[in-house]
Length: 424
Ligand SMILES: C[S@@+](CC[C@H](N)C(=O)[O-])C[C@H]1O[C@@H](n2cnc3c(N)ncnc32)[C@H](O)[C@@H]1O
Image (tube, protein in one colour):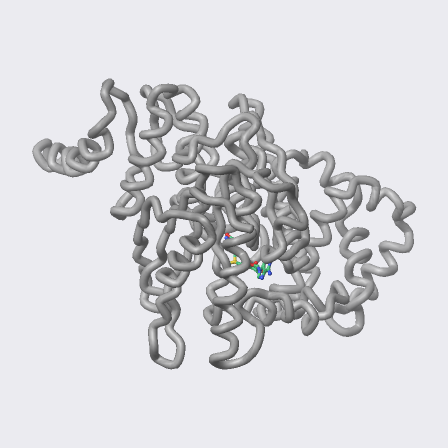
């Protein structure tokens, strides 16, 4: 029995030896037990290589280590704030789970990459295809200021809310009775999606509604909460009021736990700015060389139809989906023309990323090769070509296997580019 325990304990040793190899001083760190993939060990090694000189700072920001100098890392506590109904360790911790969104990237991976880039203090980070805001949440928890851009207003709303929730308190969110809030957002759809007559009577007796909008952050939060219920109604026919209530209960627990954690640990949260905009026109939004780093996962071309997934929410917000599609990378055109457009758009996006990035800094893109008409499109190789033509050099490439029987992509590639030249 004792022998067995020893064997289990020692199994990770060669990995730790490899991770620590090259670090000139002894460091006392312990990986999370579930770090099982080679790419994770690689990222753990990379983040440690940038921070081993300042282990106290590393304890606050590391992604793959459970302990540093015998003390639990901040990530240990953060990742224990689990999403709705989740058990065990998951990537849907903190506010990451709040709003269903396909094609998110792995938060720990992003955090380790920000660490490896060594961003801190005045350094600004950009995600020009921000999606559900994964990059921004991770940057915020380690005190790095970040900017997110997305063409889709649903994405900018969810990214903003998920970050703002980290600054809010449950008291602020509970100021207005939830029936009243629900009614406010449900008015537009009543009679179509939900029977609200009883609620309406109740709400009539409640105080003035103006308070609902006194804090934009609170208003946005409830708007997203309603859209979440709308999504549950659309996809699983969960009654709106029921969905609204259960999501609200769950997210309030998340906010409360983070509030408690902020009292226990001394967090320095980064600032976040989210903008609706086009990644192909970044230099119209930001000054040249504004950012010290970029991490992003551009659309997977034909793999996910982001607009279709969000149609219910877009129509609720009166957003013209057809007009939006015209500017969405990966969705313009049909058949082979769509792929040509995708490549053109990514050529432009790489040029724009070059313009807003400081020299000798890193631009990290995460992408998989999708299959189209039974042929694998070599998208990651195209990206390397586009980036090289846009003033970058390929510094590193990490291949991440996508596990699970239904995965459309077998591998994702973390492409780390360094800016070596300016583009016009
Ligand atoms: C793969 S998703 C990003 C997912 C993100 N990494 C996350 O973790 O949630 C790609 C995003 O690119 C956005 N997008 C598409 N065309 C765009 C454009 N022209 N400019 C900016 N964003 C765009 C889509 O709306 C989508 O949210």
